[in-house]
Length: 326
Image (cartoon, rainbow, N blue to C red):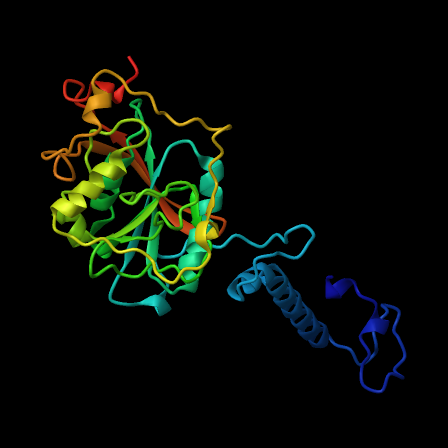
């Protein structure tokens, strides 16, 4: 590959009749000529490497779902990018809030997929992985409240997004939900949940509307029911819920990564939790969430930028003794 190792016969000069000196170089060849040849071959090598390792990106940009067979090409790692590309500048910024705990194999798929999906739609965005690192039971709603607060003023709407749900249909709308909350993973499209009041999976809200609802209740420790309570908050705030129309892919609109046989959900109901889970929390929410951010780390996952927040939630065990198993 290195030009200095190539034989002189591979670099013809001028009339091709010049006699070789003992060093193996044409008489009319100079150090300057060799230097120029090295630069030219080095540039061509770098160009070939760039084109070959960017082939997957080019295929994704053309919307091809299948990759060419064979091992993937190793490209030099890209430095993490800013929250959004310069050419995507627009009036709105999306914060993708991903409640998370120990589901790394799903995260490795989710972050690159979502970044590419939103990039193709030219939606300015940033992905926030809300990693719960305390010893309490998982609290999806409280993590979303924390993500809302920690995403700051650089974003003006949020996507409450499950890490195991990937959009596949390019016609799905992730734009600013000006008229009201927009439920992307509607019951007609979600592969598992089909009841009319379901608002989980993927829900877009402007930050103004989320504040109007006082966020989500912090009382839901363990899996489930926080979305049903939030539906009642949306209605109580006088907001109209919108859902996709004209999507013809049905239950194949999303890819669901979760394997229940491999990862069990925490569905236990402890103490009075069974009765309390059906009540509307009229006092708690965004204004009462208690937490501490242990660390904030910018990462690049498969070339896609994200921010991981390690979050320590606080639990009032007198009010919600079911935040622990003891």
